[in-house]
Structures are given as C-alpha cells and as structure tokens.
Length: 369
Image 1 (cartoon, rainbow, N blue to C red):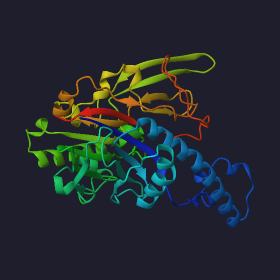
Image 2 (cartoon, one colour):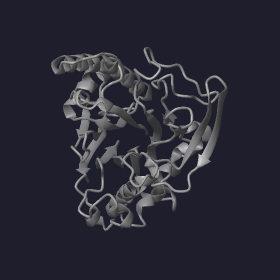
Image 3 (spheres, rainbow, N blue to C red):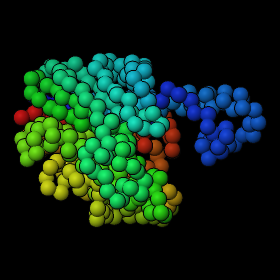
Image 4 (cartoon, helix red, strand yellow):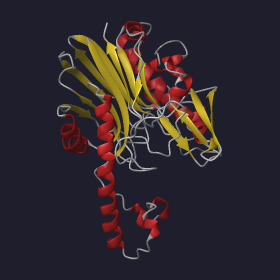
C-alpha cells in the first residue's frame, strides 16, 4: 500500500502586493531601479504589473515541479493564506494535473510576513486507498516557558513568553487505507538576522534548536517517551539548517570543484543524534543530497539540504530501499550542478527567474507498516 509523501517550500505564494520599495530602495525590485519613477501611483502600477507577470511564470513552474513530484500528500511552506492556496491549486495544479488536491489545511501561524505552512492531500492514493484526516492541530501558541526550553542563548534575542515556532508545527493525524500516520509540518527560523557579528547560521542556531526540541517534545508527548520508535510519523518541511554541505569552489570560466563538508553542530542533531528520527536522503550520494543552492558571489557558494522528510524508526525500517527524489527541473540556470546531475529545465526557466522556487521539492514513496 504505497503512499507518496512530499514537501516543498513554494517561495512566497502571496496574494498581496508589496509597495515598501517606494520608500526603501533596498526593498525595491532590481528591474524598477533601472527607471526613474517619481510618482508613487505610477510606481505602484508598475510594481503590480511586474508582480503579476512574474508570478504567472513562477507559479506555472511551481506547478510543473509539483506535478513531477506527484505526491499524494504534499507539505508546503511559504503560503500566504487559504485563498492563495485554493487559487493556486485550482488555477495551476488542477489545470495541469487533471486531478486536484481536494483536501487542504492551513492554520495562520506566527510569521511576521504572514507566510504559513500548509498541506495538500488527495482523497485517495494512486492505488485507491482512502486518505482520511482524523485530526489537525496547530502548535503555534507554544512558548519557551510552556516547554521549559528557555536558556541563555535564547535570552540574547527572545523572552520566555515568546512563541517557539517562528511559523508553526502543524500536526496531522491521518489514516491511509486504515493505517495510522502522523505528519508534522514545520518551517524553522531562517539563517538571517544574526546578532553580535555572528554568521547568520550560528547566530540563529539557538532558535532552530529550540524549535526542533519542541517538535520532539510534541511527538514524545503524543506517543510516549521511549515509545516513539514504534509509531508511524514523519517530520516534513524547510528546516533552514543542514548537517553537511557541498562547498562550490571556482567559477564558470575556470571550472568548479565540489567539496563535501560536515558541520560540527546543527539544530537537526536533536532528531538524529540518538536515532529518534531517520533522514532517508542519506542513501543518496554525498554530492547529491542538496535541495538548495546558496550563493553570495563566487567566494560564497554551496549546495545543502534544507528540506527534509524525517522518518520514525518504524517507517524507516519498513522502507529500507526507498530513497527520496529531488525535483530540480525548476531551478534557475544560475544554480551550479555537480557533474552528472544536470537535468532538463522546465520551459521558460530563466537565469535567476522565473523559477519554480529557490528550493527543490522532496518526495518519496512509503509503505506503512
């Protein structure tokens, strides 16, 4: 009874226009900076036209990536609200795939930009097994104080009463053909906004670590501490951290080298250090586990896994040969691929944009024990 489970940071699936670039040039799109626009109303008209045109291309590419993933259950990050999700599903996915995702869930979370986690579910799997939603639960209101997670590192940027999850941990209790599966959908704190001149990843590590500990606490409370390994659960989403990366060295003229590097610490060690959850992407080659290309000029380039489907030990044991697929056809041409990994890009993909997302969808087929 196979189930296809996926996750995708769809990147700013929004229903709102952002006109903040009128006052703040740093937030103004680069194409509008080419023009001397003195009138605010004209600026807003131009920004609307730019966004509408760019969005249509991007969302067609997002839909192509999702169609290629062909998941029965798709966890999403960076969704504005339910109207945005419904409009995208009907106007793009349904038209492209012919069969839509009729079950949709989104709970407004804590993000200051208003982006939320969400999930799309088919009514049944490809083999006709019903997908039943038993319970949906948001954990967005949990605070550090609630779970006794506050510490000195967090005190540099947070208060004990602050909410743990920067978006949410959305919990779905499901039955797939009568068999239980619980999914936890997350989007952890980004690697920006660091303090004390620390690099972004190090400066925000404490927040992500607390988020990971909170997810683990929720699961242990749900199934019983010491009993979680026996149950079917998956933790899915953009976790904005990595345990290893592939350093990209060089440039297009002189050629590239790709060097894998293991990180000493990661917020995700909370899941992996004692086998609490398994990262099945480790079955892929070390150069072929990435879901995101990061670059700030030729001196700072790497490939890394930010998007995850962590499996419970029970699920991992039941699927020892199942290896996640990474859908990279929507990546822009600026993304540097290691040798042998090049893929045919979707139509209209550009050097930097249009693109399906800055992230790649991750999907795998699972048998439920």
